[in-house]
Amino acid sequence: MPLHSTEAIVIGGHDLAEADRIVVFYTKTLGKVRAVAEGMRRIRTRFGGSLQLFTEGQLVYFERPNKTLHKVNEFAVVRSHQLLREDLDRIALASSAVEAVSLGAEEGEPSPDLYRLLAEGLDLLESAVRPATVLQGFLLHTLRLLGYMPEFSACVRCRGPVPPKAAVSLSPMHGGLICGKCRPGTPDAFSSSPEALGFLRGASGSALRVMDRIALAPPTVREVSLALHAFLRQVLGRPLRSADFLDRL
Ligand SMILES: [Zn+2]
Image 1 (cartoon, helix red, strand yellow):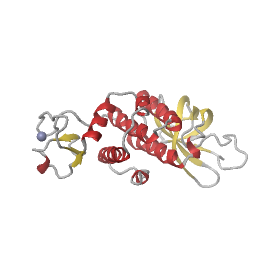
Image 2 (cartoon, rainbow, N blue to C red; image 1 turned 135 degrees about the horizontal axis):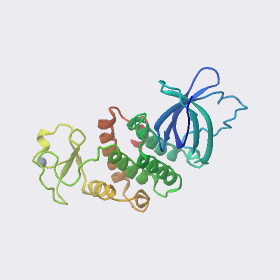
Image 3 (cartoon, protein in one colour; image 1 turned 60 degrees about the vertical axis):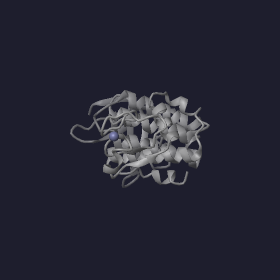
Image 4 (tube, rainbow, N blue to C red; image 1 turned 180 degrees about the vertical axis):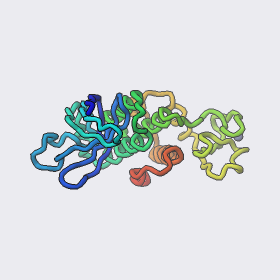
């Protein structure tokens, strides 16, 4: 069995029979990897509680040829993100982040850029003053790295420019902005406030850490969040389970 070693983040998992657990990793050089951690749920386990959600570390695993389920050999923690797991609001936000990556990434298709975004995103979600705004930036950049960046500068249907203060809508099905003329023929379009659109335009070209400095009014955070989840639902084929939390923002 070939042995692989790569930086990895735990993005999911579920229990198997006996004391085993399937752990889903997003790795820097090998993309999404699913592997069995044998005996992980025993009291005395060599994994010692290291394989928890959001933990970043150095993964060593045995590849089982022709199988999608591999075997964890070793996981050395680099960042445990313990504080992230102790705060219910941050858990929900970070869960949305790892779920978007888990659903959007294909096994066997590595994206070091997406790995770096996730690593930086989890660090920021743990320490940020405005973690909800950081998550919105994260989700937008995830859409970009998956190849589905929404168009926010011109109408995606008629290609006409949209003035800064004009009433606009967004259409996940068409992938971006819809002008007032095209709105009647676009059934999935929903209205966007100038504040929400301004944030989406600005965040597209800004580093993630900048998001923590942007003070948005709570209704705007909620509006941006609902818009990004609608775009993700279109791309991923189903809503994020953790999105329920965002309805309560
Ligand atoms: Zn138009």
